[in-house]
Amino acid sequence: MPYVGGGIEDLVIVYVAANIPGFLLLIIFLSKKYKYSFSFSFKHGYWLVKESIPLFGTAILTTSYSAVGCSVANLDSVNIQKDFILSASKKGSLFPYSTKALNKPQFSH
Image 1 (tube, rainbow, N blue to C red):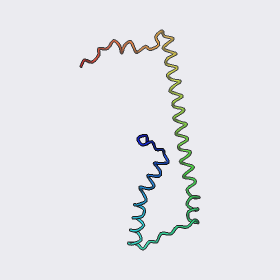
Image 2 (image 1 turned 180 degrees about the vertical axis):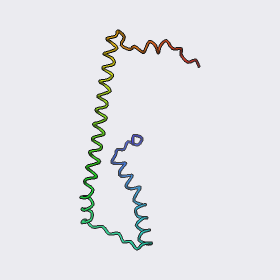
Image 3 (image 1 turned 90 degrees about the horizontal axis):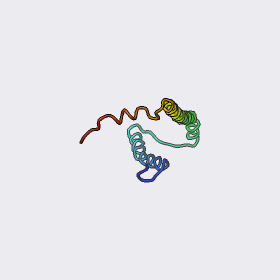
Image 4 (image 1 turned 45 degrees about the vertical axis):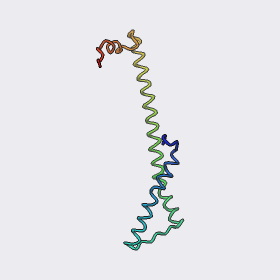
C-alpha cells in the first residue's frame, strides 16, 4: 500500500473489517432460513488452530521456497551476464552487438 503509507498489517485490518458485515449477514440469513445458531467456544477454536498448523507450515515453506528460487535465479542471471561480458572482452569488444544497433537507421518523427 505505497499510496497511503500503510503496511501489510493495515491491509489485513482493512480486509478483516471489510468482511465483518458479510459474515454477520450470513449468520443472520442462516439463522432465519435454517434455524442455525452460532456459538463460539475456545475448545472449538483451539481445535481449529491445531488443525490449521499444517496449512500454515505449507504456506511458510512455499513462500520460502519461492524466495530461495528467486534468489538463485538472480544469482544465475548474474553469472550468465558475467560470462557474457568475459567472453565478449576476450573477443576484443566488450559489447559486440552495440555497434550493429548503432548503425541501424533511426526512426524519424
